[in-house]
Image 1 (cartoon, rainbow, N blue to C red):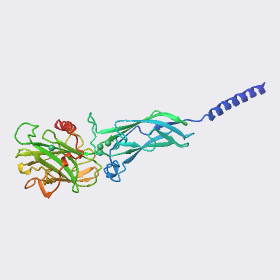
Image 2: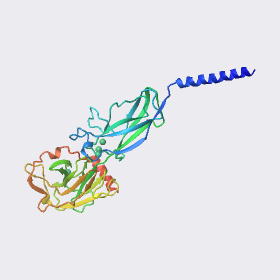
Image 3: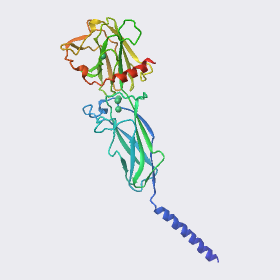
Length: 351
Ligand SMILES: [Ca+2]
Ligand SMILES: [Ca+2]
Ligand SMILES: [Ca+2]
Ligand SMILES: [Ca+2]
């Protein structure tokens, strides 16, 4: 009797053992998730290398690694498909200067057997545009979602979606004016002013709408080189002999003269000066002098320092050197488009 019980027990144990070993034969799955589900980065690193390669010599953009983790080493090499959405644009044939690119494979990721982590690499590019959307958001997004397991032993876990927020980091300069006839603002009268930014004698940004209807505005990409920049505010045409003008600056990537001015509805760094009829310079007419630099600023990475007051030329608003600026007004110098500039400017005025 005792022997039979013993035998039964052994059988039961053997049976259990058999079941367990059967389970061990199944290939274990590894749960795959994003380490962080959100990350925020600036559009550039404040140096020319972070520009899109089509915009600046030797620029490469910069890499952001999105980390993924597996809860146990992969039993088999796995291929996981992902989707890429969001407001940022990838490089394409119709849009060669994109905001980003997924490096290597933009549709799926292969993780080797034995691995416990992986990464999806995003190459980010600084561009020349000041990117603010219709809801006044100063950022773009790249949203990566793990969608399916193509092959292998990975399974997609709960944290399957990652959002990269790319924040605009440029500086913006507005130019507005008042023709001084004491009519309530907005009162630019018949005055047309333009503004340009120079580096080493080259025009690197500017805004030159025709007529007096629109405020002028341009951005300075944060990836522009370090150096001393010059700004001109030119009285292009008009009949005012008591023109007051205002330069209104913001920087969304860093500081200006040590202060923070990173919201259109917050404080701005402001400068003012006045011109008379003698300051008129139709710089794009044959033989006309160049727009004169009346303010300088030193860029170092994201920050601007030594931003001077606007100097008033003693005689006229012109340099003695004669430059050929014919056609300058029609060049593309990435001004902020008139409609958008006006809208942004209305945000300022409401502050
Ligand atoms: Ca961009
Ligand atoms: Ca931009
Ligand atoms: Ca930027
Ligand atoms: Ca103008």
